[in-house]
Image 1 (cartoon, rainbow, N blue to C red):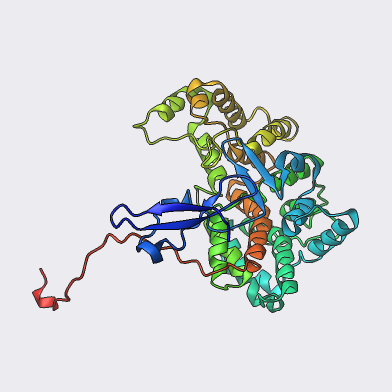
Image 2: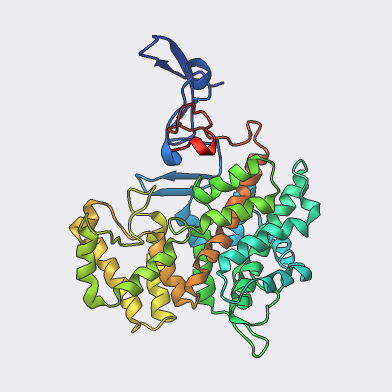
Length: 432
């Protein structure tokens, strides 16, 4: 146990207790309050768990004040500039960057697990053609445990690793199939001779009618987006995966739970909201009106894609995406599109307007990612599915870490009860 402690005294009884302080290698330490109820009969109260460390982890480090994001100690800026998505996947899963030989073996494993069971394809026929792709992802991913029984023994490291490879490999296939189902087009099988991102874009947009070639710029932009979204510490969906896993649920059910949490508009659906907001504003001529509405504290309108719950400085991922966003718009998109013109004008205002600068309401990763996806031809309904593909490696990494954690216990938050005290049951005829 850590030798550091914090003395806590109950002002009513005068009793004191030394609570252990858990150090971190970098960032805030944490007071271990697990013994507080036993000593004082008190719980801690922290709505949204904004000041609560739910676990120890060695995967991702964030400093919101300084705008820092690191995977396994590597700055996100370095990885975004130099790595492939599967290289980052390996880093997250295994803790170190792979050698060329190891990466080739890993890429082969992911590539050859991209196929889904033929019977699983029939699952999509149970969804209406206009079902949201995220609804399909939740159902199909949750059903994987019915097809892959050889990865359900949580005590076997080899099975846990295989489950991780399968989730990372199959989510692009499932997401692309969900998109094809909404369009009434035939599913496109994954290719063993294509790179991970290239393969996904091929499954999304190819048809049996003609040859389809993936744009290298589109592949590069999507690779970057996947890297930037691969993990983000103990966010809502990752915490959901961990909470589900704490009960001993199978990994596919845990990932389906994470996808469900991700679907919320305050989380993975935020980039959808950005595009909806831009379409609502309509044109550059209306920007001033909506900027004033956003500044009016009594007006419910909010500019989506600005500011961040964690980052009180410029989101480091947004800085990286800003340059790519402009390049994609210049090379792949119709630069005369009023939606893109509107987005770029909003960006310009947010970076210069005193109101936004003082409040550190900079454009965040959701602002740029939505614009890039739109320019790449990804429909708005698929934005959150893109997020799920990228975050699958983060979810599985946290799941693996939790499975090996000797302190793992079933999650059981407590509450401050505000309901009735003891009441007596009254016969129905005597009730008022």
